Image 1 (cartoon, helix red, strand yellow):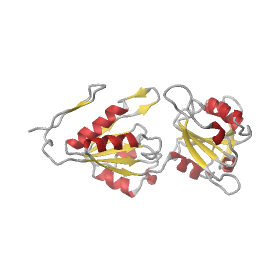
Image 2 (cartoon, rainbow, N blue to C red):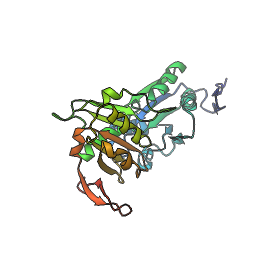
Image 3 (cartoon, rainbow, N blue to C red):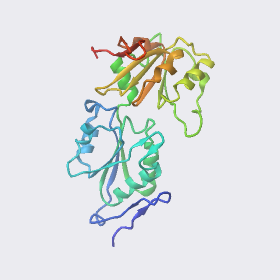
Image 4 (cartoon, helix red, strand yellow):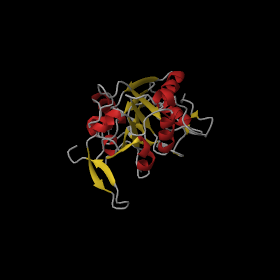
Length: 280
């Protein structure tokens, strides 16, 4: 008897079992694709991709990485950007479960690391609840690539004894963060998805006691060929973020002053920006 379709209770998404319905259960691999540079993909991630029947991927995963999957593997783009979702997260959860229940080897390919602001935990729980085997393959998160490329260590003796990763995005209103803890000196604060709230983040940190002169580094498209860096201070963070269009990280802390940058002149504003060094 054919396997019953799996239906999302929220959007009506249906995945129907076909010729593979009588096969053994497949498995899901939550794979971190890293920040974009294919050279930063792990061997385990590469091997998982090579064995995939279907790749359910984020929009920011590069074609170079997607092309590592077999040509026979089906690709499903479930890109999520702020205010623009191809599929809601609940439907993505149900999709990967349904594909595995249909006997397919599913690679859920996620930018960065699946468990760092990647909602991989929700997908893992969905697999567990459905009795689907699920493996997690860690990936290089954007903060590590941005820090390494810029030569600005996230921790550095005498300048940064701790590093904290936070999200600058909240479903409603401002992010619920411990601003007092984040404002302590000699630590690095890395903000994911914080470009649109850069002004608010800077304001809250300074109000909590972080010095306005604290170095701040914005890295756009970390590890990619079009990577761009803007070095500023906490007080200048909001203005510096205005020109950022692509996915970016905000990194605040004393050790960001070590970033490898060269000054250039913005042709529009005629003010100095700090772009990616040609030596990187």
